[in-house]
Amino acid sequence: MITVHHLGVSQSERVVWLCEELAIPYQLRRYERDPTTRLAPADYKALHPMGIAPVITDGALVLAESGAILEYVIAKYGNGRLVVRADEPNFADYLFWFHFANGTMMPSEMGGMISSMLGLEEGNPAMAMLKDRGERAFALVERRLGEVPYFAGNEFTAADIMMLFPLSTMRAFAQRDLSPLPHIRAYLKRIGERPAYQRAMTRGDPGLSPMLT
Ligand SMILES: N[C@@H](CCC(=O)N[C@@H](CS)C(=O)NCC(=O)O)C(=O)O
Image 1 (cartoon, helix red, strand yellow):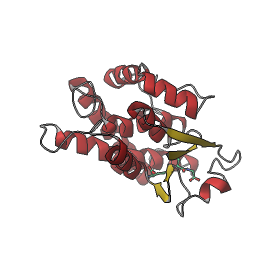
Image 2 (tube, rainbow, N blue to C red; image 1 turned 180 degrees about the vertical axis):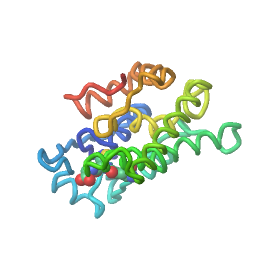
Image 3 (cartoon, rainbow, N blue to C red; image 1 turned 30 degrees about the vertical axis):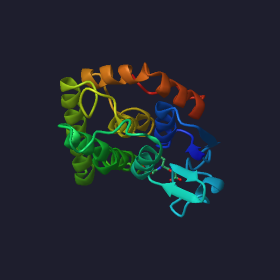
């Protein structure tokens, strides 16, 4: 059975959510962030040389990296669910949004978080570049969700599981005003109604109310 090592309020919520969507058996181990540094605690860091969440173990396998874990779990235990096959018309959309989440959105949101930690001023060129990139990313997401209910198209897929974190929990670290983005807000509401998402968040982060507004 897979063990999902979940660091509180982190990208490993995706893996808990995936297991709930697939309704596969899994063991959940929760870890709290260090209260001072907000980093992973020593026992989490010991799981994998990178020392960051998520990590799963499956027998002798120790696997990190959200996208790799999602692909692994789906390929091994998904029975074809939550993916778009290469012969389907929206295959490229599925790939794009699955990878856009951590390839572009998370780096620009993390960059924004780091520049505010460093106290960089608004006019700072690095900050301006990151801000502009983040705004274009959110505008692209808003446009997409005005066209289709889920990132890959009409059906919920693993691309949604990848994309939700930068739209929701990441806002605990890098604030973003969603009031001018009605399609994103409607999407977050739709996701919040999914029983598997509700179970995942209740199990994974019982003290946190999901950041869906
Ligand atoms: N691209 C990586 C990013 C992992 C990452 O940055 N995880 C953060 C939580 S969201 C973390 O472990 N932070 C705690 C630490 O750095 O100690 C993935 O998706 O697996």
